[in-house]
Amino acid sequence: MTPVSVPVALGDRSYAILISSGMIVSGEAADRIAALAPGARACVVTHPGLQAAYAQPIAEGLRARGLAAAMVTVPPGERTKNLRAVARLYARFLAAGLDRQGIVVAVGGGVLGDLAGFAAATYLRGVRFAQVPTTLLAQVDASIGGKTGVDLPAGKNLVGAFHQPVAVLIDPDTLRTLPAREMRAGLAEIIKYGIIYDRAFFDAIVADLVAVRRRQAASLTRLIARSCQIKAEIVAQDETEQGLRAILNFGHTVGHALEAVTAYRRYKHGEAVAIGMVSAALAGEEIGLTPRATREEIVAALRAAHLPVAFPPDISQEAILEAAQRDKKALAGRVRFVLARRIGEVEVTGNVPPEAVCAALARQKTLRE
Image 1 (cartoon, rainbow, N blue to C red):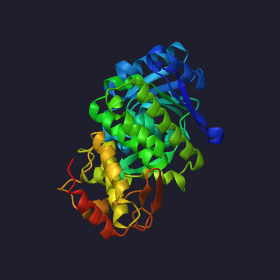
Image 2: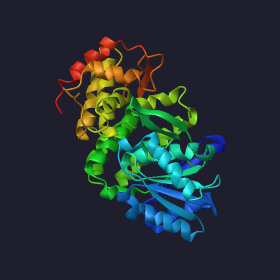
Image 3: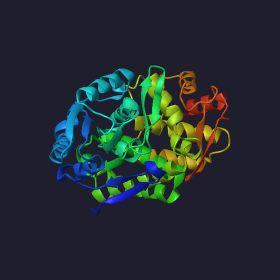
Image 4: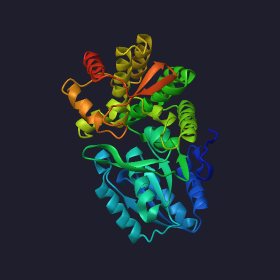
């Protein structure tokens, strides 16, 4: 496949998202990172399960190109994304001699990118970092836009910073061995882009679902590239989420709350967002904003992607509302929702009555998977 480059236009913080099959094994990823930090010290942060296949070739490539590259591994999973793990990364950065000219390279999924990115944003008041996302969800969402952060016991991403990467290097070959559940989680975020921004893209996603589940390279690259373009366009207009960028949170109000009340053990992020998108569609329908046909299209697309749509029967609506009020997106204790007017057009509102949310979640409990 021909490499695709997607610019993220942020003035002096601009960078490119490069999508190129085989770039890790070929050494292209190491070439590009080395060119951004010639002769510097580097720390490659990854999970033990990704070290041999992806992180080691990058680290060895950096060393061959004159960088002193250390390897740092952290355990996988959302429960690792906390301040204790950040402190451990600081210690490893110090031991590796990472200075203000250095670069942190995150090789892994969205949780690892958030963690390593936040450590890079705050170590020595900020050092450069590059994203090499290896999951579909990270490739289309978490690695782009400069949001970094960690969780507190009270909620997800309550501590964080905006710290743009110097590059996002996407190798679709990493998806060949990605578990099917992780692929589906990434598809949730891709479907979200169609709902919030682009009706034609939504239709293309639905048409391509079978090909994507079969890991067909052309379909995957096409969906990844358009998703990256949409997020780059939104971020370029609203880097720090003062307005337009908030539409990216479609499905995240209930999704984040659901992750929190299940202690990040039951759902993948994309699965929780899929359920949250249905919650938002039902809430919008309750207040007369979202047409029934739009809600039905959203549910049908998620079901076709084999994603969950029903609200878990063992969790109360009240628990979700309480968790959502603690979320960083809430303002003055008021829960904010992104609601769909139609496929391709959404709006952000803090005026969804709690009783409408409870009614939506009660209806969602009756849906079949």
